[in-house]
Length: 345
Image 1 (tube, helix red, strand yellow):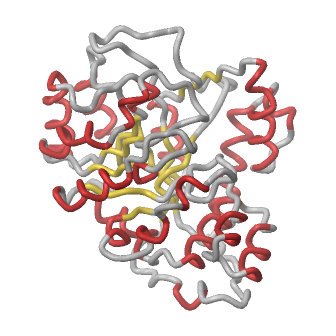
Image 2 (tube, rainbow, N blue to C red; image 1 turned 135 degrees about the vertical axis):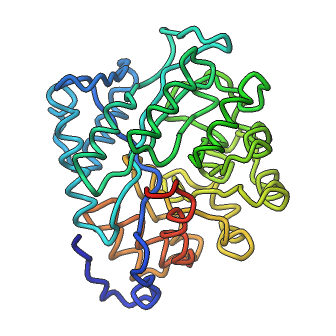
């Protein structure tokens, strides 16, 4: 691991955490088109083309990657970024396909797919990667797939309920959540608005849908802390905050807290920086989503010299980490995930 120098006139360097535990980015996406037999796919409708091109350029890949070996180039670049950052590892996320409640695949839905076997293999090959798998609990083989993934080293299970058509509160999934609790596998579940991917059931972004897994004993991380992505989204953050008081196993992550259109999430940032909420947060970047500190500087959460230094930094993994430290997120958010992962992870 290479630790980036932090000589900027800010307090982030002084607040670097003790190195007894790994520093982990717990929310990093894998993307591919299937080159090299990965099994990935990506739907690139013409109107999404400019967005995909912008994402590719923002992480330092050429536009030609979208038409070539995107899978291999993406992983090589991600490894380079993690190794060149102050972090030790990243949880890389699979992406389940879309199913109906009876376990039938909805082949006309979904923006991209990343198989569990692919992220499990990447984690075996690279110590910088930890495998976050994705399983729709309505799949006819959901329990078998869960046990397979745990046996092969999965550290958490990720789902996007509103995009993958998963009602986490459906009682038919009770045995799946109970089995997750038995294995100690945490659930990282998207909450709040979503504009990057196709949304199938927007109401499933409500954190109250996570009560059943919590009651079954699953440790749950609500991605984005149930905040709004856009001005017209429901603001679920107060509901999430109330649920953290009821359920000690409920956490939130800071993924997408530094995106270009973050006025909506910025409205709740002050509460996230204070205890007791700050004690329930996990660090995540949402890579490859762009990291942009302009709004944080404009609202006084980042001093100008700190913003200027890190906004120009070419490593988005490091940029996200350093800006969040400078904004005042406790250093424990970067290592807290260690205590939530299954034994031996």
